[in-house]
Image (cartoon, rainbow, N blue to C red; front, side):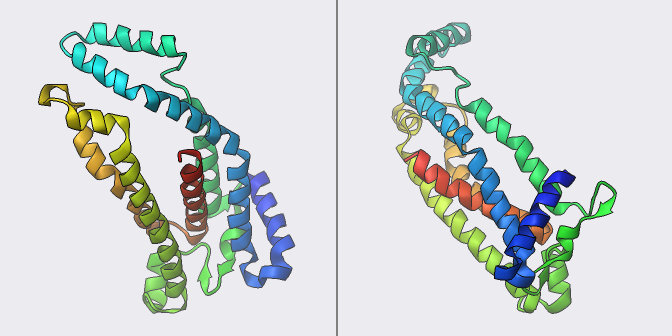
Length: 241
């Protein structure tokens, strides 16, 4: 992990003439964007797999209604359908899973107080008046929500809320238009997918949980999460249109 820390430090040095004291914060944002750019091919593969699986959902829903009393026949029929259409049930899942280690590595890098037994130099820098190693609670205790550091967090929360609202509208629109939702709405009570209604109602609100995450983590890690979340929102809007 020290290799990534050194890369971010070097990037901050390069950005120093442009961003001054905020160079480390700018380096975190740029480094996160570069990492997301590197894994973008995996995201494209995941999108292709998701689209292939989504296209089969109406037919799977029909099979579920036809074989609802015989789980074994349903399982075989679904596997045959995937084989017939040459779509793997897990297509696109693996690329998404491969992004998880990168997420945890970067989160650990930007939230750890020490790296290889040495103080994490990244957390000693600031974004305007807010230290990258502090949390929102530190800003509240230092000057309140409208203090110098508190205003930095309000700016971060505004960006997160805007991205969450964008994801909320997009998720509601996508969920309402999905073949599974349409089939489930038109199906009889016995043919509906268990729990689908609850998931459909709750899913759009999940984006707003990022506000809680950002509020309790160090500002350096919050910048990573905000950058990655914003990238994901734009990327999904393009890939899943």
